[in-house]
Image 1 (cartoon, one colour):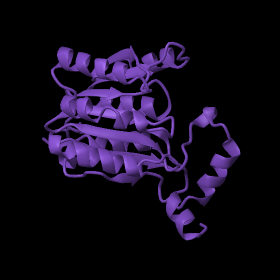
Image 2: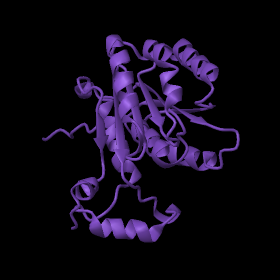
Image 3: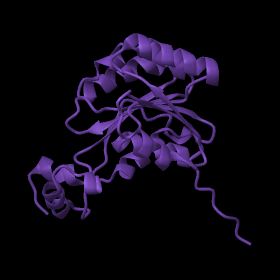
Image 4: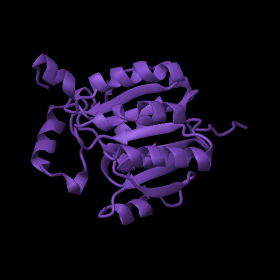
Length: 226
C-alpha cells in the first residue's frame, strides 16, 4: 500500500507575524502559513473593514491565528510587539511585511530587535509589487541580519488579479492576454513563494528579490509582446 504524501512544508508550529494580514497579499500569505500548521499573528488597524472577513477565511485551518493592532511606523509599538511575542511564544520564526506603502524605512529602524527576535534560522520576507523600492532595503537588511542567521528576501509581482475587487478589470484582462502564462498573478501565487522562502530548505537564499508574475515582466523588460 502506498503511503499518502505529506504535502506540508515543515512549518508546523512555526510562529509567524504578518503585517497588514487581513486583506490582499497579507491575507493570502497568512492563509498559506496557517494551511501549513504555523501559528500566525496578523496585524490590523482600529478601522480595518476587512477584519471580519479575514477571521472567516482563516478559521478552521491546521494552524492558529491571533490578531493584534499595530502601526508599522510606530517604532516603539513594533518593538513592544516583538518583545511580547518573544515572551509569550519563546521566539519568532517568520516576519512577513505586507508592503502596502513604498516607504520601507520602518523596517530599517527595527533591524536589531527584529534580528534578535528571529535569530538562528528566522526569516524576513517583504511581499509587494515590482514598483516597491525593495532592492536597497533588502540588501541592507540581509547584510545586517545574516550575522544572526536570519535570511531576508522579498517576493514581488507586477499586478494581482483580485477578482471582483479589481480596481481596473479591463487592465487585468489586457495583461492576462499579454502574459506568456495566460493570466496574471493571483494572491496565492505570491503566498506560495513566500511560504517556500520560510522552509528549512531555503535557508541559504539571502538578499534576493524574487519576481512572481508568470513571466509578464520579462516581456516588458525586453519590449516583446505575446
